Image (tube, rainbow, N blue to C red; front, side, top):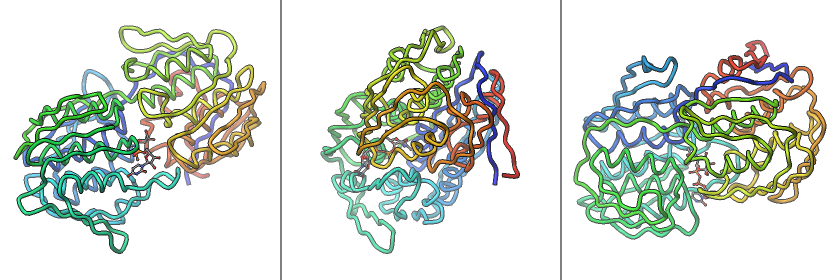
Length: 429
Ligand code: UD1
């Protein structure tokens, strides 16, 4: 099994290129199922989750052609053309879906295009229960009939296809909003989605669907109006920069007392993250080619609560916690989106962090230093928090279960080494 070995306490200085966003890519790829015309996605990150999604849609009949990295930005993302001139299968099998929860995002497009879809109930990150009831209710509002049997959900459209409808989400869900948007784009008539997620990845999805010919109003707001089309067409779309990757490297600057330029990061997608960094005592400046985050004295403690966009993202909670473990005072973090998203806490504690969890709240008492240790985590962002802790810790840290990091961080060791980290992958762990 592979592991990442870090010798910590090196100050990181330099430029880190930010890749295309994983979570945007995972909702843009299934858009290819909505049309028989080619969809080209550029700035697609090289990630295990993107490959897994590629294999999933290949199995449904989508032809994928990778046209290489962009010549003007070395290593800066691939372009992929996806063509589904016909759908070969409407079944997303357990073996694919269990590897990646986002596989549920083929449900809406397959149902809208073919009138039926069967998708295994998802697995994915072990960060709580994560039901899909809101996805199913949204599709029912467009006329679908849902059956659950033997670990699969089967959705069937009425004769003549999905029809526009009123969807009002009781809680904000990124994935359910994405499934609803994709399905509504091919439904007959108008759909209104209330309490829609407003995450930048949703805006990116809307832009792609618009480029394919969908008519969507209210983009970026909690009320979306979609005029369904009988067919969508060819398009090219550039995947937005990964705000969570950028935020993670910002924490790497903070925890090492460093100075990093996050090349290509988009500040308007990261306001709550940047506000948190500033309150933690970092100097954050928006520059022409990205965001610069530099240490400026000791780290200060924070009180933070995760919530849907535009508030502070749950996907940054673990990385901030690692950084705040070394702050000059006591921080209080509250996780409101997922239960069971503190699995990094015992591992950070093994490195010397002082963190008490009670229910949804974690109290982080800053310590003067962390010590390297072998650690492992059970989800992607938790794994990154351990890498961050390792970058600041005295001695050697070994992060096991590297496959979590490969799901969401493109060329992690390369990007960190280039700015001065002592980090390598070791195959013998
Ligand atoms: C997406 C992101 C994930 C991020 C999360 C919240 C992708 C691939 N993943 O996940 O990285 O952490 O948004 O920003 O984009 N819920 C229900 N029923 C449902 C769906 C969700 O109760 O049918 C609940 C969830 O359990 C959770 C909350 O709603 O408590 C938000 O989840 P949701 O926004 O749907 O997260 P994902 O789309 O799975």
